[in-house]
Length: 144
Image (cartoon, rainbow, N blue to C red):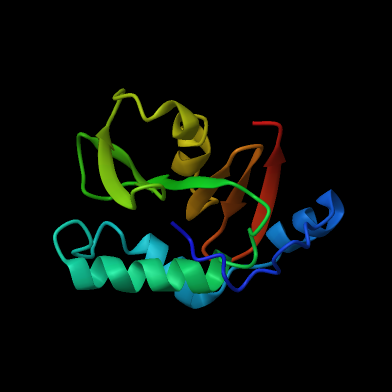
């Protein structure tokens, strides 16, 4: 789970402020860390997983204080038959999914976008998705 202790307690952001926050470019450190899920030892290396958690918390902890981030989905580069991988933030679990293998329902909606070469990965929130490019620019997809 993200550490939301740095977020303002009791000061819910307006929807406009939340959207403005979500539109902010992501840092190179964050993009590189998430993009490295295929090459890193995060699945078996507790220190690597803890470092990844710290980077994600640093990037998104206060940014998504009033949002419910469910997970991150991106293209998987492990080779056939793998297609995408997910980072489910509830239990901080990294899974690799084969072509046609169903993702958890809350993350399945991001699969097609995650496969698009314009995006490095997709942040999946309860009410929307944020597509993040390799440069860190973002695009919000509402109503998902």
